[in-house]
Amino acid sequence: MAENHTTDTTFSSLPIHEAIQEALEDNRLTHTTPIQEKTLPLTLSGHDVMGLAQTGTGKTAAFLISLYHYLLTNPAHPKAKGPWAIVLAPTRELAVQIKKDADQIGAYTGLNSLAIYGGVNIEHQKNLLDNAPIDIIIGTPGRIIDLYKQKSIRLKNIEVCVLDEADRMFDLGFIDDVRYLLRQMPPAHERLNLLFSATMAEKVRELAYEYFNAPETVSIESEHGTADNITQSLYHTARHEKTPLLIGLLNKEKPARSMIFLNTKRDLERLSIVLEANGYPNAALSGDIPQKKREKIIKDFQSGAINIVVATDVAARGLHIPDITHVFNYDLPQVAEDYVHRIGRTARAGASGTAISFACEEYVYSLPEIEHYIHGKIPTLPLDEDLLADVVPPSEEALQALNEQKAERLARNGNRRSDRQPRGKPENHRRRRNPHHNSGGDEPNGNR
Image (cartoon, rainbow, N blue to C red; front, side, top):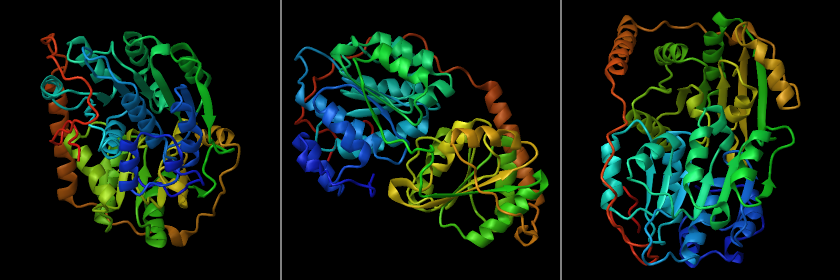
């Protein structure tokens, strides 16, 4: 959660609740980032905010500080029941990361948060909701709706609502779910509302104006949509040259930590085992990986246990991975905005980074749209034959293991039952919010 690209404004100079200030000091966060400098004076005084900021700018801390401060300075009615705040995220990975940051920023608040998302047992989540007072829900819209309809979550007392990566909500088709949840909450003027988005399309603005209370707009968007400290380059290459070129560039660049993006899971799985055969251990991250395995990959990447992740766009947004030096677009994305989101994995918090893209005959058609979107040409580099490495093919054992994994996944998906369960029992009585209460355990968050 460390933020290196900071302003002269200190957190201590802002009227932030002392319990939050203490946690910020623990995490050595002393100065605000630009988005925090613009957002916090508004939210601390009760104004709704619509923020234009990419990941890596400190926006998560901006809305978590705002959320915790509002709850701590606006006591709940003694007979009311939580949760009091909700953070909606488009992906499971982002929800998990926000929960991790919430545990740090809210360490001394006595407020309990819980991450809710699909891909894990819903009964377990219901038990957590029923057996502990949950003050803050962080999660994906679909699973939250499931639990709301089963009466395991109530929304009538929500005081703070955060929509993170709102543009991605539209991209993934979640916006109807988001609207449904917003309609179940108290009126906008009775809540503090925050929305953050990497792009501010008209549909995102309309959502904020419809469901928020006269939100103030804050922006730190780069003029060209991409960070100035990312060195971008492009190779025009035939499809069959992409793997030799990638391995050649890995040999040459020797990146400390990199992400490689592809458009399809099939190509991703094949590339992953080819890289392994050529001396580049890696982890493959795509949409249908079991949740526990997905979380382990992200944890290992964050810790440095692995330094190459091969990914589809499911991992392109919202992940807080420190010190990614290189992003490779093995396939050019088919949506221009995704180019910005992908390369935004590097050069975070003021660091520099490198983004290298391959334009093959299959995906080169999206290049004009990408360059129009970023208002500039991506510098093209000549394809030197010396860069094309000799590729060692994967072993028969590796290919057989890949085929077996595919067969197991097909069988699992064919037999999988829906996670929607029969309507559950009404939720148990829960304690009201208490800033001095500390609870133990890992889930919900154990406070220090």
